[in-house]
Length: 161
Image (cartoon, rainbow, N blue to C red):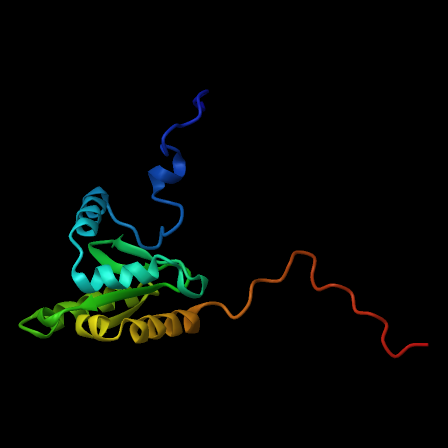
């Protein structure tokens, strides 16, 4: 039997299933809380890059500190399924390269490409980094929108008298 009152405050079936936009990459409540915390303590390169990406360069929408399973992505474009990671110096030390590779493999298995940009590059030439990100996103976007229902419009009778 169905409940007579509609759900309120996002408590419907889609919310229970974890559906909606970004359902391919979402996380449990703990991951969401972690993402919210990380949004408050972003690094200077992340803040600088977000200042541009939030303006939707070339009409492309990005999310910041997006929860994805056991991980949090610095920036994510769901339309192109690209995770953008801003890597500081620590990403080249110790076991971090192996951990990054494991994380990247996790995303690849879910159809998500990871684009890594160096934090120093963001600070040195933000415009070039944004252009690089936009270029990679465009390469993964569909070339065109699906055809309208009902097929193509009829052709004119060209060449007939």
